[in-house]
Image (cartoon, rainbow, N blue to C red; front, side):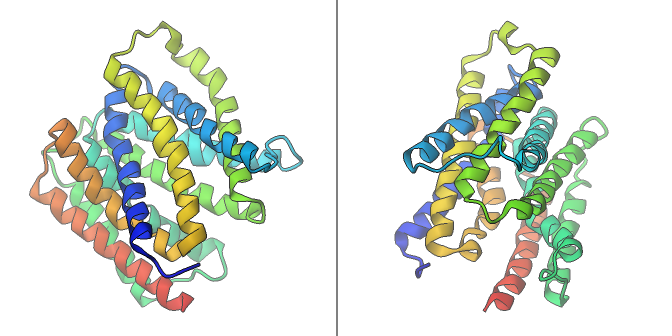
Length: 295
């Protein structure tokens, strides 16, 4: 690892923008496609750059090795379930709210880490950060202008999707000694396999005549936020480490809110801004506690 340079901060910003851009593109994709189809196309197109990279670097993909059940389980929990839940939820709520709700992943992972790992226990700073962050989410649910009885369940499903990411991350520790490219390629392959029968029986997307913007968005979701973004993330992790890369957690909800306003003219209320601030502060305290422990 090295001291971050201008190029490293530029890549971090690009990664944040790419992941933040996923939310308004999911919203556009829902104009023509169902949530299962969106999930399938994301993993299908996302697998292409990762598999090509493994082929180029001569890295063996072990999707069908003796550990296939781990890859299949992680593929379902870390890709299939959250991609479906987020797409289903975003159909009924603004994409900027989804960006804020999904940004709770670092807070949820801290809670699970306390119970399922030996070295990630709570301390005063982490506890304060978790309380502040989730207080912001609770406050967001009080915004009756944006979250009402018609889309309350959809917002909860997006939160559930963020929790799936966390559980998937914990399960990934079981195969943490394998190369990241191999793991990512393998879980994308299994996610695709799982979704093929589901999308065929439930939504039959070949019968859909999609809008042009929806088609562009769903292809973009697969290739860029799912595939290319992972490659950028891997480079940042390799050059600068996990603590530096984790700073995307602050930027994603901010960029997600801005992009939702620019491209979809989504409403930004005072409660949204307060909730966004609280979540970012909560993540800051959790990350600060992790950084101090590391050093």
